[in-house]
Length: 177
Image 1 (spheres, helix red, strand yellow):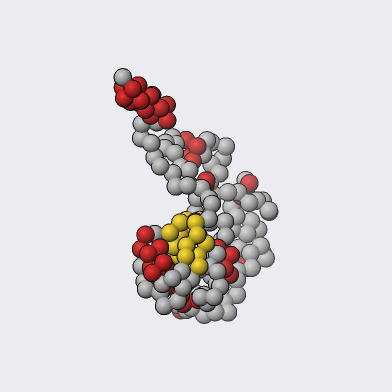
Image 2 (tube, rainbow, N blue to C red):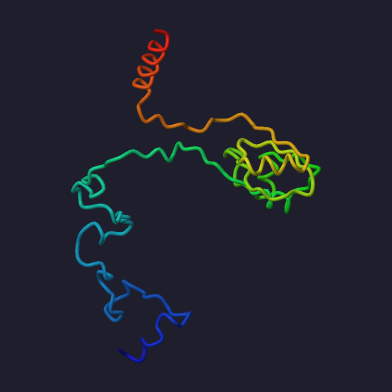
C-alpha cells in the first residue's frame, strides 16, 4: 500500500485517469485496452452476455413451466381506514378518486375494498370487489357498495374443460335415468 492511495475512494474530488495520453501517464499507447480485437476499438458496446457467437447460456438452458404474469390482472386492495383518513364522506369513492388520492396506482387495476373497521360516516363505494367484513362495516354505517363490472376471478378447473364437460354430461344423463 502506498501513502498516496490510502484515502482513494474517500476523497471526493479525485481526478479520473486520463488514458491514452502518452507513456508518462502509465496508460498510453493502447490506453489499457490490450492489443487488438473488438473491445479495443472505440464505440464498442459489447453486451456482457455476448459469448463471441457461441450459443448464449440463456438459450442453451432448457425452459420449463408456464408464466402468465404479463397477462395477469392487477388487484389493488384499499383498506377502509385509509379511505376514512384521506377521503371526505360526501364524495363518491370510485377508482378515479382513489387514484387521485394516491391509494391505488392505476385506474386500470381491479380495486378490492378490505378491512372491517367501524365507520363514523356513510360512504358510497364503487369498486370491483369487496370483502365480507368491509361490506358489513359500510352497510352498518349506512353506506352502500356498488360492484363495478370487470373480469370475474378465475376458477381453476383441475380436470380440464373437455373432461369437465363430459363428466357433467354423464352426471346429467344418470340423473335423468
